[in-house]
Length: 201
Image (cartoon, rainbow, N blue to C red; front, side, top):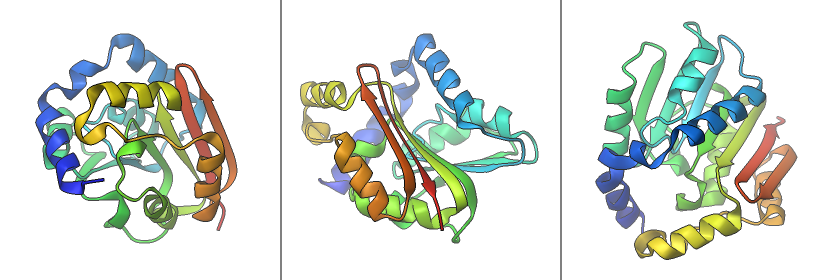
């Protein structure tokens, strides 16, 4: 996987990224996130945040005393996210998930929407997410397609994302447990891929 090529690919998509998501997609995301038990005052990291698709949902749930911190390796995506959500409880960082610029045990929850297949080193990314989560914090990896559906989409797009895939259920469980997570649940069916795990430290 070419890291620089992926950055360039997403830099070029940043201006139009929001247009790829329908009102139905946003409603489905809202319903999903409401099941994550987000509480006021939480500090949440959104890994591979893109232009901040989840920000509005999350920032309202954490309230003024909580924070949402988005991380994306595409500088143009990060800039667009900052422009979209210039709120006091929203931060955006241009960084790679394999080297998160945060202290250990910083966040109460991690989410990753429509990003995991594009991480250059998925196992290292999971280990970094585990590191920055507080003991008992949850990770949610979200896609609005199954692993098979997403692979077909990326194959049709071709280019740098042609081989970017979500792990199978068994592979994802193994990867999450290998990075220290427990209580792993993977739901992979048409219209949804949701992997949830707990940072038991």
